[in-house]
Length: 404
View 1 (cartoon, one colour):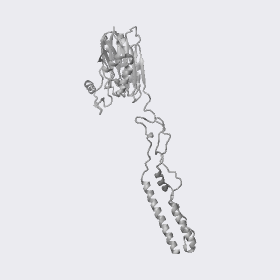
View 2 (cartoon, one colour; view 1 turned 180 degrees about the horizontal axis):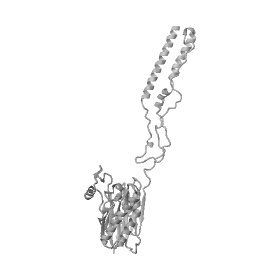
View 3 (tube, rainbow, N blue to C red; view 1 turned 45 degrees about the horizontal axis):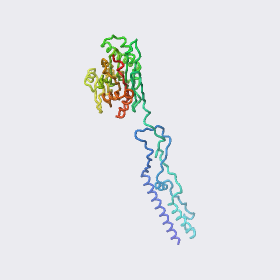
View 4 (cartoon, helix red, strand yellow; view 1 turned 60 degrees about the horizontal axis):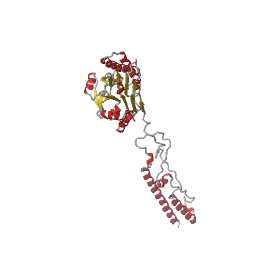
């Protein structure tokens, strides 16, 4: 009988060891298999949006129930049954004690396979992280609408950066000459410093130079050219070390004549009897004469992967205010055009390249012909609908007020 009891005890011990080894194998297999915790769809931000608030709240995703059941074995090992007093020497125990000890061992082995009543499953800190909130991609676009005595203007910032366009208007009497008026649109690059300076200073420089010049056509054109160079020199002196610059398109009305000048890719378009006529030519290295000029001065022009010609592989325009680091090649000498005003000269459209990249000259004239008062905003909207992501500034000047 004693040997039978010992045999049963050894069988029970072997079975318990087998169960423990089996559990260890399951645990190792679970440890090697990553638990994938699905993130709710609401935690994924819509395309084009950025987080507007800090991710201060974290929601911890719980593992599936089946995984919890298996992980309990990993966290809670089977209990170890302490040996009985007679386990060292079974010969010293009675038959009843040996039978009772065998029952205890069976109960302990069976209890080792039971699952605990509760379990807290640790989850990695970043698992299932959900942002506290989402906001719009950018602040509302900066938008300006101005209606003057004989001009209208609308301007809207692109979504890429802060507004870098500007404008200037001088329409009051100057030394008793009520027919002298100045209008300008400016397109900055590399920050607002250059365009702010030019918007404030350039119109006054042009008007002062023209009033001090003679009355001949060449005198006025020369005065405008000199005013452009003066504004550029003042800008470089004032903003030493600044790398930004500004393009420009300006119009001066004096004595029944219209003088239009430009730097870069701002453009002025005249409506003559409903037909569009560009009075400026864009200063970019896509033009052979501009490429040749830059290369004669020792610079180089390269074409980017998108097909844009750039001075020194950097700037897309070949003439502009500022840009001190490229001044040897990016000059501020404007092209000046004179147009005698006649009955057929209806209006002038001056705009930054944010418009002209998406809207043709004739489309702009047609839109203004329908309604001068609302045309500027309509053209800004048209450029934006067609995919313009640049700043867009449009000015319309009614020339009929200046026709002799």
